[in-house]
Image 1 (tube, rainbow, N blue to C red):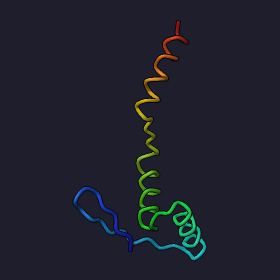
Image 2 (spheres, rainbow, N blue to C red):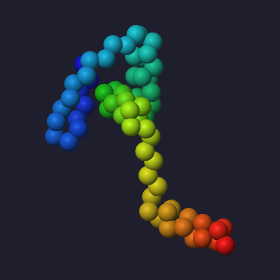
Image 3 (spheres, one colour):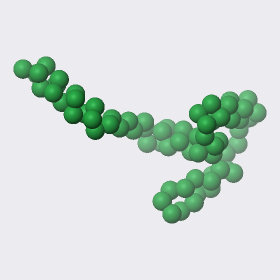
Image 4 (cartoon, rainbow, N blue to C red):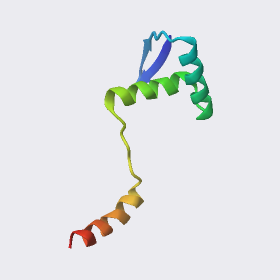
Length: 72
């Protein structure tokens, strides 16, 4: 049973895994220094919603100048 938190609600999802998959996910979560439930929850969210990348604001400001020069 995995507990995921979205806002103030807790949602529980039962996931069945074979031993090899469980060990692989456990090692990957430990490598990133995260708990297993949070790591698996993030993987599920990425598969459902896609990978949402956010660039830092300072990088966006620097890239805006280059884009303007390239279009001229």
